[in-house]
Image 1 (spheres, one colour):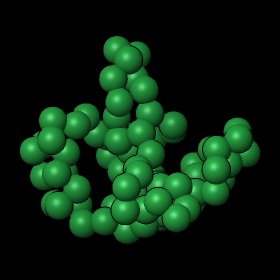
Image 2 (cartoon, helix red, strand yellow):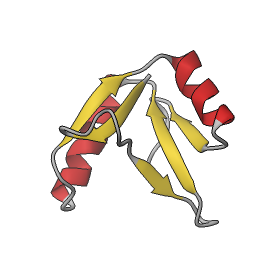
Image 3 (tube, helix red, strand yellow):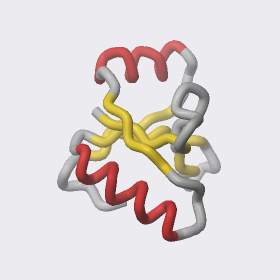
Image 4 (cartoon, one colour):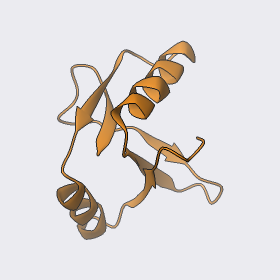
Amino acid sequence: MFVISIEGRERDSIYYAINEQKEEVIYFFEEEDDAVRFAMMLEDDGAPKMVVTEVSRDVAIESCEINDCKYAIITRNDFV
């Protein structure tokens, strides 16, 4: 899976969206190309330079569950 972070802050930042309930939701992308395109859209909207990093699916999900973080796995068929 792939996550999006601010360039230079990959160790301490990860992109998240705010859902309809005003909760932070981390996006995990199954496809690198989808993550890259989404990062480019964020930059076009004024975000700082973003980078895409591959992460272990199991570690990412376990980390979210341990820290009570909401997450969404974005598949190639999802539109975000």
